[in-house]
Amino acid sequence: MTLKNKVCLITGGGSGIGKATAIKMASEGAKIIVVGRTETKINKTVSQIEEKGGNAQGYAADVSDQDSIINLTSAIINEHSKIDVLLNNAGHSSKHRRLATTTAEEIQSVIDSNLIGTIYCSQAVVPYMTAAEGGTIINVASIAGLSPSNLGGMIYSAVKAAVINFTGFLNDDLKNTGIRASVVIPGEVDTPILDNRPTPPDSNARAKMVTAEDTAEAISMIARLPLRTNIPELQIKPTYVRDNSTEIENL
Image (cartoon, rainbow, N blue to C red; front, top):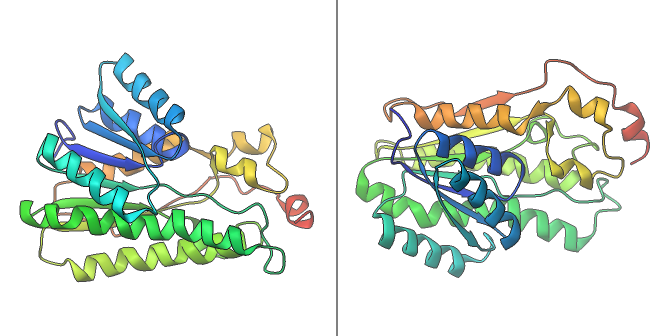
């Protein structure tokens, strides 16, 4: 299976893993629909794809707004008649990482972007994938969802664990429909989300991390596999284990 002419809906496509995956999939001939909250970032992703001869459209939307996602999905179907791949990548962490310091606003925001948005987008595309008797849903979680820590953060770790669990539920709920769900579980990836840490890693630390492009390769490989085959979970981690004790001490 190739990605040529596949319609791929990518949330959080304005930067990081989402942007890298949009560019990678477009280079393989996919028709990319990029969604994000910041229109200027989305437009930059679309422009980069088009400059390289790729096919892309951008939509500014909040994935935690169910009506917006339903309307967006309907518009995509009206234009393209299908959605082959959904990448639920939108999400962010909180500035505060400890239980006692994380605010109510941070808790709700992280839940909305990482989990609620993933659920709403999946709900929106599944009826069309069911009718087509096939589709791929890929959710981006984090190693923090498997090994919670202060560095990952209280609410981010809990929510990414929920995303991993939700992916397993999708595979059970949608078995024998032709729809497969996979969760990609990255370790530290050098993306803008690291800037939200109380002590952002320096350039030397980032140089040894997985890159957004590395992760995009893994995501594209999952999407490229024939629909008869699924990878329910895929971890991608840095080869080198770095010393982050100073960052943890400053939390």
